[in-house]
Image (tube, rainbow, N blue to C red; front, side):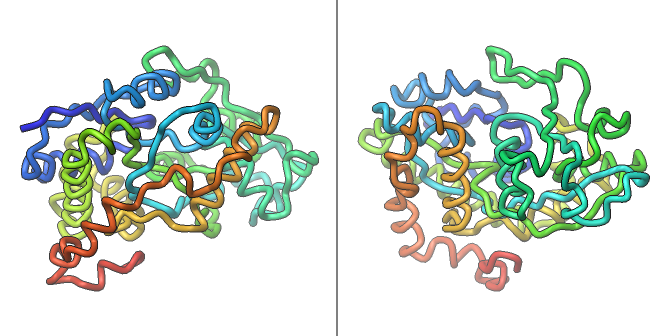
Length: 329
């Protein structure tokens, strides 16, 4: 049994990581995984290239500029390429569709989620860079251990108290705020590399390819379990996934129904998702311009996934429900 470290950059990733663990997928692949721990951005960039931390779940944007400066970060598999965001507002704002937020105050939070907000608005003709929307950021900091701490008001508080007029949210937070009387408006999902990603380094590729293959297989097995075992997965979410708030059955079922259809059985990223996250990398590094020197696919290594896929391993997991191999199935 090989012991590995696999911390996350966002606690939302635990919705899948707990299921991989509780389904026994890591153990069946000979891995003892230390996964229920957050890691900061700086520590991730420091510890992953040396192999001290074997894998990280996440770290999607800063890696492009870092590669231009000599970093050896590599992406090996992607669990989700569709960000099921919704538009959230108060019932009294008069906002009925996304266009209605023009010239309004729009809430934003975090590094990557904040860039997601910027890009979605820009791509829908509401460019914050040209003052078509006023972005108001949630005041929070990333602590040395990677935890995010809200300094004053959360997005929900800002919205309830009139500091902002609207924002984007995802499940399970959407269910929590809807119970507090906020208005939820459906909008198209955002193609995006986010959520749980198998991120590693050239060191691991060169020195421990077998561990990479086994971790990818465990993730693929965990996704198959998640998709094909609704009741057991909902129970795991209720029992284990508490860092986004304690889930009752209704909220756990809503989270399951939101996530299960978009989980990628083969762990390939969507091309439009890679393109969008690359645009965010360019935005984040626009003062230096280093990210622009890196190709959007330069950090992705599909060699391991290709071998697993060609072996028939993934198809074998869905032989009773082959339609689930299609995203949205």
